[in-house]
Image 1 (cartoon, rainbow, N blue to C red):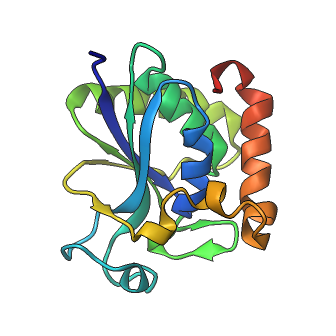
Image 2: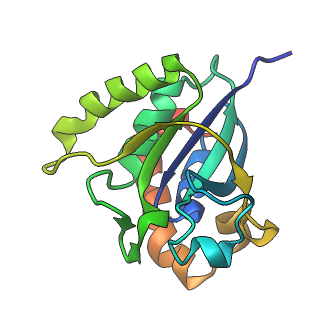
Image 3: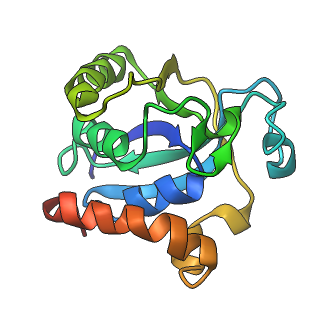
Length: 176
C-alpha cells in the first residue's frame, strides 16, 4: 500500500492550480476548496466577496516516492505569480492570494527552502503566505475538475491553457 501525503496551497483561482497539479506524476487526488478563513463551510458566493477570509486552494494527496513535496511546491511557485498580493491576473481579492498551508514542520521547512530557491526567478519580492494548515472545505461539485470538464470554455482557453502549456514545456519529465 502506498503511503500518501497531503499538501494544501492556493495561487489565484483554484481551477488554474488544480489543472496544473492534476497533470503531474504521483498525484492521487486534487480537490478544490477553501481554507484560511474564519467561518465554517463557506459557500463559493460568500468566499468570492472576500469577507470570509478564505483563499481558494487545492488539497492534494500525492505519493512522495513519485513526486516530492519540494517538487510539488517548486512547480506551484513557478506556475503562478507569487509576487502579486491578493491577485492573479484579472482575479483580485484576498480569496486569490498566494498561500501555502503546511501540514507539519517538515513541510514548513521545505516551503521556506523553495521560497528562497525561486526568489532569483522574480524581480519583485515573494508575497506567498506560509501558514499552518487548519481546515479545508471542499468547493461545490461544479468547481471540481473544472478545466478537464470545461476545456472549451473561454476562461479555460484564455487563462488556464497557457499555464498548462507552460507546465508541459518546463516540467515534461514530471507529467503523466
